[in-house]
Image 1 (cartoon, one colour):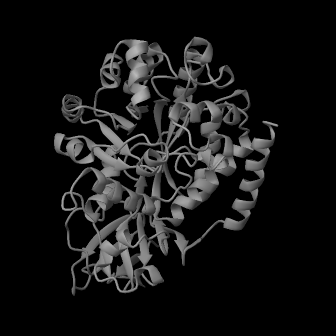
Image 2 (tube, rainbow, N blue to C red):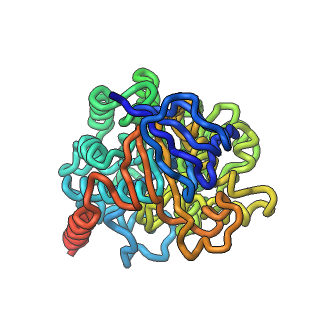
Length: 452
């Protein structure tokens, strides 16, 4: 029989919706069935109590943009201290050597790192399909099932190689026909619909400088036909804006509209260099943006205009981005980065720790068009993260939610996905992290050895 669990009396709670759950939440199966007010007792019968007195309770964090394969190429010497385009051109030849076991290890390691940071849903943008890796999405589905993470896997693509004026080497690009055929295959095989979906598929041409306009249009048509979302990088750097003007005679958002992408089923990675009029158009179209603070800082790309976008109606969430441009996959740390970089663009009273927590939870869920995750409410999925403030960094803190962000929380104590514990006592429940790391380090070494 399905038991009812009471996550009882947390030290602090962030529901992402202003409801009172200071007495905790009740979970039955995969779903939240009751919020308990401060000092109250549950209405429903309780089978099991979980004492959260010393813990801070959050909805499971939602990562809206990542490249899990890049965990294999953190801090590669040849790619250090470079701008986006030369950084990509340095790493593309390395990534072209990806093998199936490498992607499996990279996906497992990245998902483990994210789970341990309180992240329960991960959107991954995989766009590299060399000959050895034509079934990359299948590999990631298997790895995600092993880890117990909820995932939105985007079938990315690159069709515009160096020979045709693009950035990626020819060995990493596919024909439009190959791409579209596999996009349809993975949608039909893996995409789950409705509340509680553990695996969803979206379609994600990499960027304007790595695919043709015709592929962008055909991908949009296929996504509409199959009822899935669209994702791409856009307006990340001034160089990208200049590329779009030179290649298409259009600014990035105008180009996006020209290929039928300006609508609510689209979310963009980075979205930094938009002007006021473009932000208004994005809001009217209900576009989503994955704000990636650490990556944007590492590559000196700029600071996204989060407040203006939200005010215009743009859906704003957080992404850690690839572990080669962030060098980490820790979403609770990204919450702090979002707050701090926001304070560089706005005044201290204009961006709060609650804004940053909202972006990482309900905001990110909205970016992915998911209304079943990202908040603590009756009927939502039982995805949650519990954080301890027992470390020295939190000593003397008076506001527990603010401390979580300002004092730099970096690991979750307990994490639940769809009603199942995936992390307890800051350790993975079903997987051995040492074994995952050992395999991953070996694969990372092999990948770079292939380059001589």
